[in-house]
Length: 283
Image (cartoon, rainbow, N blue to C red; front, side, top):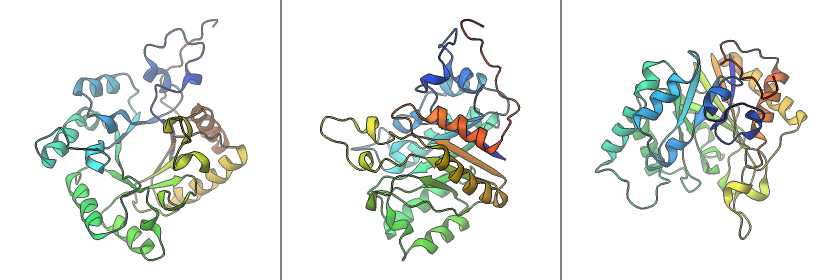
């Protein structure tokens, strides 16, 4: 099965236009898509009550992909607000409890930063992360091209298969060392993740003076032709994995929701079990 969704649910304004209430955006979001990426967990580990609320607001079959906390993936600058690395991992896993109990946790996503290149100490740390999440499905995404260089391409994918990492296959700008190629290889028999970051080469590495990186890095609107091309790739690989999760992250200009809905149309998918659609103001 192919599940299509977006990264986050709060910033996709087109989903909430004409809605009588915008106070419960997640429920509205869940009337369009069956899966979402939780990215707030990257910046800080949310309180357990937040997770319980999200679980309660979504249909029984709804799925969450939770982005690992930045202290886990090395994005955190300075010290982590925990007494030890072990405490950090335990706190993150504990907050996931309600999702696990409700069978709504599709996977944890470990996205490593652009400077995290393929070298021995980084390979060892990736292994450590997998050990910490040994009882969970976990996806692995790199942002440094060295992992898929000619020297390491085969070894990277072989390792991911051996340690049962879910491959986060990315469509993103080809902008040198700080980007990775589209690598259509399944590494986990149960699940595969796709993240559509757009193809804005200009904004990927470094925004212009005065520009906030969030405003330009993911500023891209996929054409129908590009969505059809990506749809063929996802469909082709779907026979090698039980579930494919496709997330659109190209939302700097608000294009992710429309692209996600169009992708579902192109693939001819009809989802069951979505949340009831809210009536508009004039319905």
